[in-house]
Image 1 (spheres, rainbow, N blue to C red):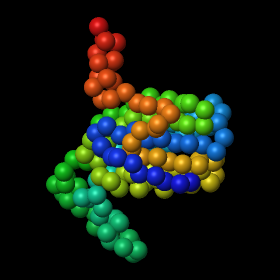
Image 2: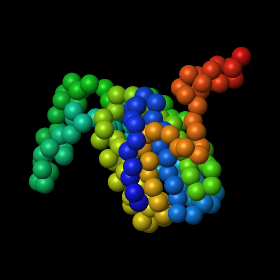
Image 3: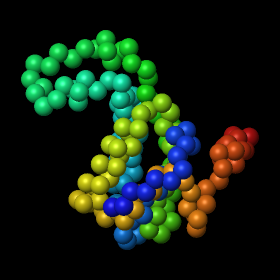
Length: 152
């Protein structure tokens, strides 16, 4: 699986997945479950690089004294929003507002999708950010206008 970073706006981020073959309905559901789980952890503040007490301890975690006050004193790092998945042939895409979550979130997603590609559904490319020349996205202003018109 190739990982390609394009222009990144964490508050207006498209993530693109190109499968090796067009995904079946069940494969689409698997992919969406990975992203839904990732987003839910982000919504709960799981990707907070200011509070990595276990990681920073090293290999010997026995009898680690976890400090809940350190967790409480770190800045919130939560994802804000996730759009619906869209599919076009071998491509899938989804929009995210990563909010204040840390870049650690993207590393975790890449790691998970890499293993997902090995074990479940082959992914050719994971594209983070930017636009697709053959499948353009509406600007954030256009999306907002579409959402507003849907409510009127």
